[in-house]
Image 1: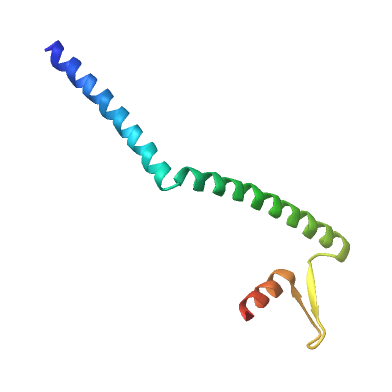
Image 2: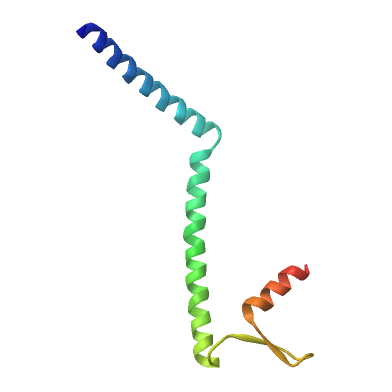
Length: 92
């Protein structure tokens, strides 16, 4: 009975080692590790951009009043910056 349990334990250990080895080979072949590293770097850069944009927006809000707006000289209306940028992206 002890020999059977010992064989099962050894078999499971070998199976786990083979699984981990195959996983590393697949990740290396498909460059998954590199893609994850690059995505983490992109997230860090996006956080920097968002924090700098929020600092700029806060500074503009303090100097111009309650909201940041963009004036339209043709219709004499003011549009919040976020809506104005959305309109610009949708035109293209």
